Image (cartoon, rainbow, N blue to C red; front, side, top):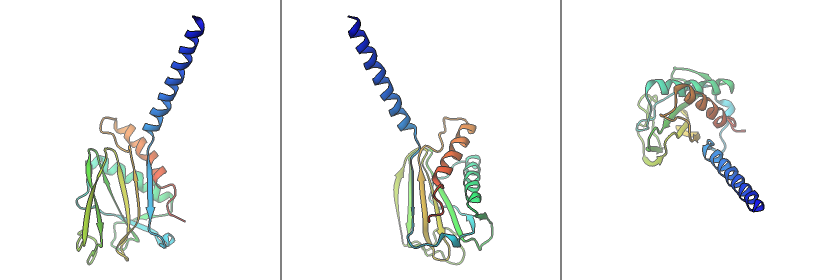
Length: 183
C-alpha cells in the first residue's frame, strides 16, 4: 500500500512540475524582429517619434512610459532623439490593449516632410494583434521605407499596476532592442 502512495506522490510532483514549467513558458514575452537587408544602420544617429495613423495607441500616461522605455534603449545604442525635421530615423509604435487591428503600409509616398503620416500610401493591409502586443517600427525618411520592425507580446496588462507595467515594459524593450542595430 505504501509503495502505491509513493508512486502517486511522484506522479503528482511530476505533474505539478510540468504544469509550473508550462505556466512559465506561457508567461514569457515573445519577441520577434526583422530588418531590411542591405541597410547600413551605422548611418542612423538621430530619431524622431511619429504617430502611425490608424494604429492603436494607449492613453497619454502609457504612451509616455512606452516612449521613455524605448528612448532609454535607443540612447544606450548611441541614438539621439530629436524633434526636428532632419531625423535619420522615424520611430512609431502600435499597441493592443484589446484585440486590435495592426495597420501595415506599403509603398508610402510621404510627400514633403512626414507631418501627415501615411500621405500617398499605395496599399494598406490590416492584421489582428493580441492584448499586450507592441509593434515598434523604424523608417528611413530618405528612402521612405520601413527598415526595422519588432513586436513583443505581454508588454502592457491593463489589470496590472503602473509600476508592474513599467518594469515589464523596460524588460521587454531591452529584450526587443538587444540586437539593434543589426550587424
